[in-house]
Image (cartoon, rainbow, N blue to C red):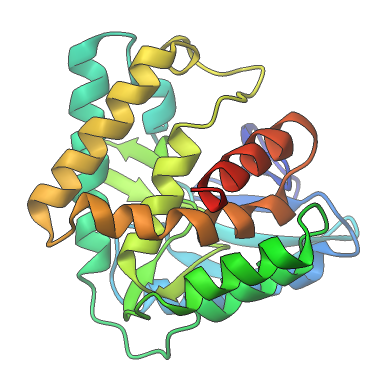
Amino acid sequence: MKIGRLLGAGNTASVYEWGITEAIKILHDPIGGFHEAAKEARNAEMINARGLRTPRFSGMIQYEGKSCLIYEKVEGPTMLASIMPTTLSVSRHAKLMARLHDELHRVKIDIAANLKTELSKAIQMTEVITDQEKSQSIESLEALPDGSALCHYDFHPGNIILSPDGPVMIDWLNALVGNPYADVARTFMLINAHALPSNAPAWLRKREYRELFGEAYIAEYAKRSAMDRSDLEDWFVPTLAARLSELRGEDQCETLLQLRSRLGR
């Protein structure tokens, strides 16, 4: 079978039509991609078993020497593309995303917590901070409660498809089990980043709309959960420190400055 129309593309993978009812996610890296695909396949099987709003996973294959994952094709635009540059649209979608996130965190999961362990590993791998900054970040992380929630850990409007049957959450590569406030902190950090992709939609390019989206999302999530703003603040240092290993260039510099500002308080 040959790939069909391009459905979406990111830094690590592109998604194409695969027949009539499925989509194929092709990882760009022919070497490291196998490990990432195998990890996502394990996560996808675990997610599907819990009946979440996510595409059905069909399996992992090789296509032209690259590792690929086969999913149910979900029709519809992403939330990122659907938001209009108006206060009403930004606020409405932010609240919807908060409701979905809270719904996800209420799912019962019988898997041991691994979020703090994975964040600690990511902090240790980071090359742009000093040993002292690593120690401070890990000490901050270790002082926080583990939790037992299913965390997407890359939850943002670009990973939500607004299908005719309702919103669908995609891209579970980073899924972890742990404290839900860590997941919320990561999402808030992603939304408020200054560095933007070149194809960012109009609303995302306006700082006031990004800030409105972030605040509306946090307010709605807090209303639906027991989260206090201080709970969120506690997770920012380890979240920023762990994020550094994923970034390069301007994005990394911005995150490093934010981390050092918080460590210096």
